[in-house]
Length: 451
Image (tube, helix red, strand yellow):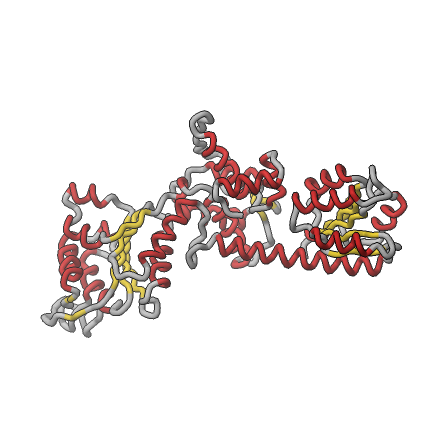
């Protein structure tokens, strides 16, 4: 359990009891408040996981009205905080009322430090487990598709398109800049399809020499050319029953484009050097970073092939256009590489998060992944800085705001940005934005954001 989870706020107006409680819990980081205003201020600043609350607080030390008001305000500001109400002897009526209002537990005076310590430890443990559970839920929410980390509206829209297309047999074209994660989307498309128990066969049309690409795609018969010592099945035939992924199809040579078009129309192939037609049942998914319409105008890509592979199109936005995704991805990559490389735990500094957010990422997700990995290895301190990411000297791309025309959009972006910077910590987000927690919840609902 981390140190952050062992924070205790004691709300008690009796100085003697304050001292007794402060020295009774050595394993806790402790702050003390004697009235409601101080307690709420400490709550915002200190963010305790557990609060012990005496109901008799000034200006009503002989009653319970101020204590109950404090209880309700603490829960409104920090509903996850575990509150242990300290009541007078045989005051079970108020204890039960406090539990009904949301307190975690109650304890009757006089104070027994050992017994109260046991209650506190149990409360801290529960708070810690709830935090872990919420963190897992956030991680799952940030992975709308298997293997894909995203929180931006732009990428969530792409994910919904993948989910809709996956059960169909539609030939799909995925467009996007290099490094945007097109291959991850193809894998998600395959895993959600009814062909998931069959092969996903991928071939990079730009990585194989032109004179070898035909035999790689269609296979060849024994003796078809020098060195063809045996009949070899091609990638298309190998994918029979599954999915064929043609990456960088914009680099496919024109003669092979004609052969691929015939296969897509007839669903039969002929191996190089062969005469027999072989039926193949595959779903074809293509991807490219090139503008195929421009290629068609220049004569570099067949128009009839374009419309054959483009029964459905998914456009993957570059990282610079995904609101908040750079920060979410950076944190995910950091945790992944800490575990993979078995390095000490580190976190991204506030300046690093701002640099990540403002940089244009011409290399997209791949560049971000590489920079985070290098920074983790090279960092000297516990916090990773813009210097570690090699972003300190790079010009940030800060989009201008016109508040009169885009006031609500600016407000939505500010809330989303703050949530990403605080890793969805509601209290710190509210402080960063200068609003109360209820106001923040209203903004989240208004702009349909996720916490």
